[in-house]
Length: 270
Image (cartoon, rainbow, N blue to C red; front, side):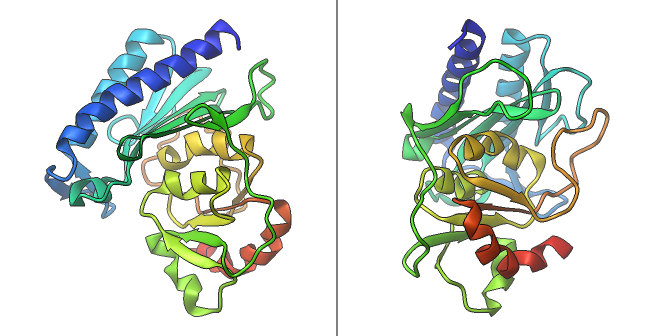
């Protein structure tokens, strides 16, 4: 691994663990307020966002930043970090130990690296995804430094599929797998990357919910399937991403797309 990518990985690990250690002190005690989109925010979200933006500005001064809490307009810079300082704020505020810190790195608007740390679980996922970037870089997806890969299992009624709170309408019809609802967009898709589930859907994720996991999921061999016709990436310079959602289906193998996509297709029209 080149010095640049080693620096990227070491920085992401160190900063998410540093911020996560402090967030653990506030876990279950933070007072939450409601944002305009109905989601919750706490002072812990805002503190973590500021800490991560400061760390990026200090270590990578030529890189741009897009973040959930403050910076919503995609900048005109080749390298840009996308931050979700606390994915799973409702879980965090209510004392459920499933929430994380997400950092994604884009090159010319396309994710090439993702790192997501879940302090209560002591789990850290990361991945490198070259895609069409043209970069010379490492490849692979990892959980706590060990390689992971999407499951190749045949679908049975005892395998898992993840829903989000806004996609439960799909249960009006019989579903061929056991349903789980985790309440954290990143973890929803990362369980597919790690081989624990065969698929998952998020009806209204924002760009900071998906950038890091976009790289990790594909590096793990899973299939990312947007439920809208327009491509998500590359992000467009000057566009405000605060209100745009990206309904997405992720499955462990391409042959599962014709199984699950018709069952969740109604999500795309929302």
